[in-house]
Image (cartoon, rainbow, N blue to C red; front, side):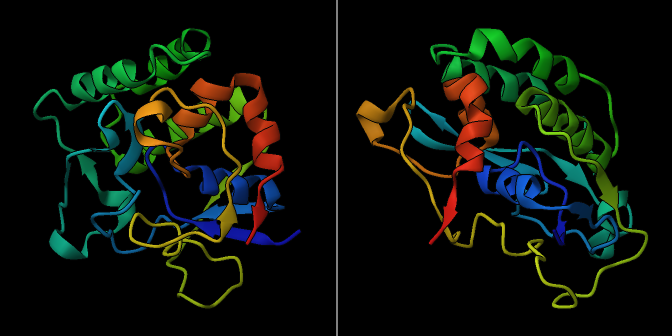
Length: 206
């Protein structure tokens, strides 16, 4: 199995975990120049209103050239309180929220100043819940694009379409907005619970 290259991500979408599950080795690029409006500091959940983006406020100590591992989380607007309240409102009626939310919340409220450290803490918690035993490695230098196959750093993006076929599963607000694919992994966990890993294992490419 080959190495897969990913960017750091905040409660990543389902496709992110598909690639982790199918990979022999996972490397997250910590030395890329930070890109805004990506999953690096944003996730998308399924709310009463449909798609709901949640964005972590960040600061760039070295301006627009700041490397991702130097990006700091801005302690403003009580963003953690707002994000968790939105997540809770969206999923409190899902079948497995009550069984999984506390473990995720305990990681979520930890005081991590660096975005990559915060994201990695959440990623480890999610992988544990999914019972996916994979070691996450970090690059020591910037990985030049198109150098390796299985480089999904810029492919897994809110602005890019994915190449996976997502079977429908029950979602809380599907009666209002229909099935929405490739939500944050939170959507899959809270709706499918222990079946979430099985769902990931059975995703297939178009």
